[in-house]
Image (tube, rainbow, N blue to C red):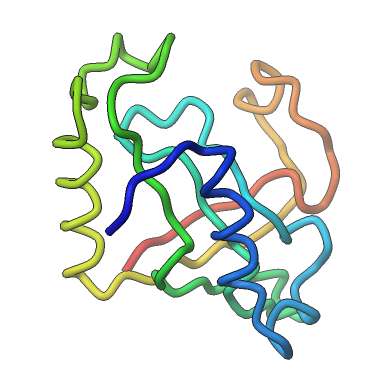
Length: 137
């Protein structure tokens, strides 16, 4: 693995995962790099467009693959939970990376409109793709 500043890593991640025949089939809202805001674990960026969109089920399956996840080399300012799951160096991020890399992980996202108290508390939109249940396996 290599380290770098987010501003330098983001275009590399994007281009490395923009696979012809896969990228074009992903909804435009799901293309790009996402910051995992509020994630208490030492994980910062992810890419979803490297997966498969199943429109009839409004579901997306994303394999864990090279260049689709990034971890911090330290504790970000205002890290969730006072940075309890981060470290001052690359240790926490690389521990998280090792766990995911060795596990053969895939993520499944089932989209729906956002309903309930979570949506009211977080002012979520009621867009059909504003809310997803995530399963990891």
